[in-house]
Length: 417
Image 1 (cartoon, helix red, strand yellow):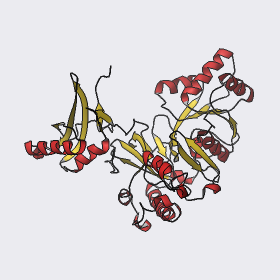
Image 2 (spheres, one colour):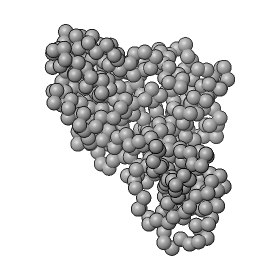
Image 3 (cartoon, one colour):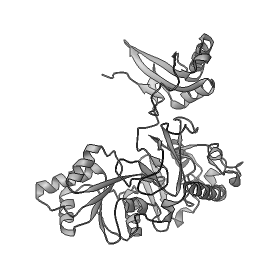
Image 4 (tube, one colour):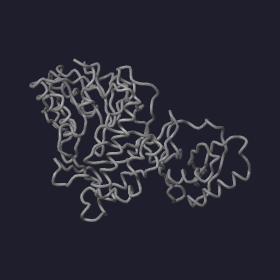
């Protein structure tokens, strides 16, 4: 049996890039014609001109807050999805509701969310029984994993969350091969099983998501005989990336194009730099283009030792929205980006918010080459801070490359009692 779900996973990286951007041209043309919510943003865009990442980076970023606003405030003809779906609502398979509320469509077709790839990499195969502890109530996670399991040929126990005693009894009786759900709930089930004397040893593998998987918890679950892999997916996009080898990065799905951008902007960062994950899906039913996830990560060099050749994300590294309040005014990453844009000499910037006694302080630590430093530039950056953020901030020059590579553009170090 193959170690890979299909031949897409082992494509030559350059071939994958060409094929994905050919599919992107079709996706843009599809969105312009069939998704009226994209009409204005794509009005002047020639689909055939989107041949590379530089061209893609010129398109606007769509944020979750924009998605909520379009769904809530758009014309009735665009509801409930803000005009961003390319199929009529009545032709969908399901409509989900995520907190916000945000309405998430599911089109018709097998494995619409593309989760089979993550399950296969986690070791699930045809004939396995999967105990599915993702929620089936309103949100799509339960159905996302179930559709992927059916694509592989697995049977599914739709367990959902809660009811730990019933979870233990069901696992002991049916003897599933493995588990899908959050890692913390798997630990709870195992603890309850020990308390009740339930035999849960049939579960040998797990695919987890929805929260962090620290090494200590992975090791603890391994101690129960369960080999754990994780994946990264959202209700908006479906599968984004998945793990094949523990702690070796998350391999990008074959049907998404991922960019890493500087928080608060749509500008791609340099290779190896931490930034916000922005995803363009090649799903023709819901053609989300440059959708900002709000998550921080970075791309790893090279390819996975498992033979899959798609790029890899390091994993979740925090949230990109670092908005904070200083002296009663909100400071946003987009404002920091605008200040940097006004001064090309700034290679990188980090705003440090602290407190001097009872007073908030705001320091802009800016990477500027020694030859470009001077009182005039310091004063000009200070004036830009006042103009954009409506607050006074101190400017400190630091050496190029000295700021941490962690994706933070605003760091709040105040102690909050």
